[in-house]
Length: 555
Ligand code: COA
Image (cartoon, rainbow, N blue to C red):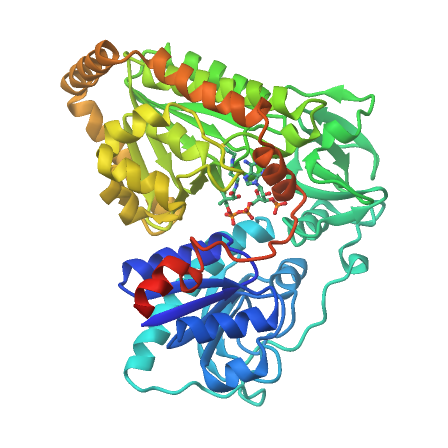
């Protein structure tokens, strides 16, 4: 089928739908919802069988939905309507929620229903629930609907007299609904309010918006800041305390670690300790060491990477045989920390420090000759994060993972992390060229075909973690032989071209990106960090706007 994705932005959910539809053999093109005439033009150019809108912020123009089958994904149960579906569900503390696929009609979210799927809620931020539970439900709904369409089935009209219709029209959540009353609100309530606002818009609290909340095991006078730990401040609630990891100035700016905004004179708790905010943790199960690095939004600053490298070096000195790099809850890694770079007095200098720290870590992994290394990717990764994973001997992906193995969207950034060594080494020259040219997200099975990963398994995180442990144990059975093969290969590669040369060549190009005449990287980073809306859909996504293709059709 020809499917046009009409979306506000190419977010993780849209990316996952895009790769799944493509790998199922559908002809998919994308248009950003920027302006009604551009949407009309996209429809005219692509002539889709279906228009799918998994992430829209406003209604589809009437002449489009009247003339084409338009399916809208709503992150809510049947009958739920309005722009703050998940926000309300988290604020209320619902035990279950859902996603619904409906047909666009005049009234927003009130069209006939093609299907709905429920899921249990997790204690997590809105974006995390959206990336996992909503995305899983959306994929199932879309494929069910495509099948139903093939069988000529029809959608069910929304009927509030039906007892199964549990949702209702809900207003937009306002800051007054999110506002924390520190004297009264307990930990549970504070967590709900910040989690319901995670990603966007945050909870307005005095001069700042708050994000990234976790339970803290401390107590103090309600509302007081009672400790710090790395990026986070600890604030007492009426019955306990929470860590707040990130804040944004209400007047301007972007999210930064909370302690970059304020430096209260309170005790500091060791960052990765049991009592602390804890980004990095290590534990062993027999001869397998697991290193987790749960960095907010998968962004890795210079100091975070330096700490991770120290933890990695300690892990590689342990009498274990396999090191599993397990990443974080929501992302495995998204590469260098663009927000911290943006906030630095010299963005170019900080970019340089950040990429060098990444390279030190990549190099340490590639050169490990005592252990087998595994990147266990139970969540998505982007840019340098993908290549950092490929530095490990084995890359295992959860089936739902989406990788973005490219840097060019960040102002033609050349990229480093030894990708010029790792891509040809694991993917072959042809695939390496394809990956770098196409600038598109890649799903788990495609990543395995391309050699970006070695295996994909597990439909959910707990299954993925269990199978990762089993596979890591299986590596122990052949450990000595596998280690010999790995080290011989590394020695041969080193003899052919030293790693230092790859590093030097890549960094030469990166130096030009950071310090050179062309400001594209700095402009792209500014736009990314400040969330400047796109004014057009890139041709890599809007295939219907690809002039070369259109000319070929015309001749
Ligand atoms: N540095 C700082 N913040 C980052 C980041 C990075 N490298 N990568 C992602 N983020 C932030 C986003 O700004 C967003 O912030 P929000 O919480 O304020 O909304 C959040 O992480 C989630 O990102 P989003 O783009 O909404 O997630 P996604 O799953 O839809 O897309 C990516 C993931 C990786 C495709 C996209 O975030 C991206 O292109 N990141 C930049 C990667 C990059 O170029 N890194 C530098 C070169 S190594």
